[in-house]
Structures are given as C-alpha cells and as structure tokens.
Image (tube, rainbow, N blue to C red; front, side, top):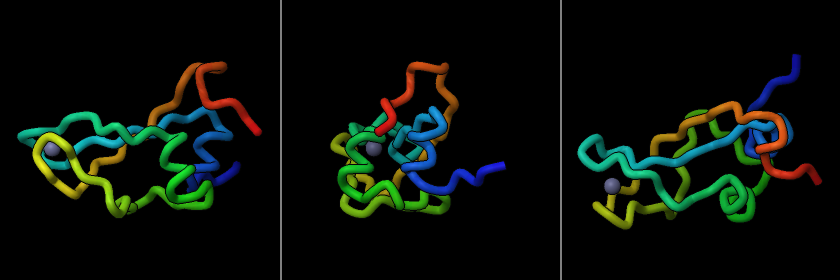
Length: 81
Ligand SMILES: [Zn+2]
C-alpha cells in the first residue's frame, strides 16, 4: 500500500483537496485549489497537520484553514504529468 502524504500523492491517486475557512461561523470554501496549492507550495508539501501560509479568508480575514480530502471518481482528478 502506498502512503498518501503529499499534494502530489493526492493528485496521482485521483484525490481532491479542498480548503475551507476554519472559523465555524464562516466556513466558506476558499479559492485555493489543488492545482494552485501545488503551484504555490510544491507537490512535495505534506497536507497532514498543514496550515498553508499566506492564505486568508477574504470574507472574515481568518488565517486558519480546514483541509478536506476526498476521493474523486476516476477521470475527474487532475491530469497526471
Ligand atoms: Zn472566513
């Protein structure tokens, strides 16, 4: 079994990552996508316990994010390189 630890692993296993505002009163989906996250932080970035630096909720200004990992149906992930 392969360990899935990094953004690149998620991409290669057709998983999706979503970033939400961590403020429970706001909790909106942030504009940060997997593609953008890989561009900004690199495919080697681990996502467990990760707080992306410099990401801020444009609605409430909260700097903490909640990360949600989901499996996506085959063919719906990001194209492999
Ligand atoms: Zn917010």
